[in-house]
Image (tube, rainbow over the protein chains, first blue to last red):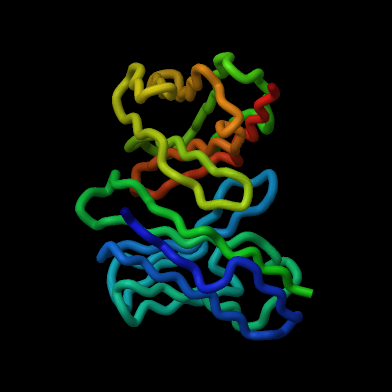
Length: 114
Length: 109
């Protein structure tokens, strides 16, 4: 079974703090994704990566950056957290074998910025 | 723009059948996914349709009509554990997933 893990289930930070969200997958997947999920909205793609050290902006990259130094790990960084970044953050991974492969999700990190 | 529409919430009775609809307008189409997401948990894959028609997988079936930009997820013999949100997502011409907001399904005894 594919396993995607995220470093924290719940996180509370203060405005202006730097925040790191870590995601690790154990299936040697090439592609990894960071989404945020807010009530009444579909999942919105923040960044994705299709290989080590490669990154692409998604639909809402402003205020975020990412790092992929190793294939299994994809980090999301909030340089200076703001209250409008309070959300559920979901990491996903996908094999690079086919464009239509399923994405596998981690359990999510619920971030609250005070 | 790209748009996926699903009902926000539906209620059904244990043992019954429910159909969750999804309509989409996207730039290109390379398939449609359905995911299930229990409260506080990760979305998990249910089905993928790229050709028109009905695909059955146990109690769950998924239907696609590309000409109508329409899909539905059919859940039979509902169980309490089916209470969850059901997410529709379309793979567009760039192979990017466009997500609907999800349908929260409430099952009553």
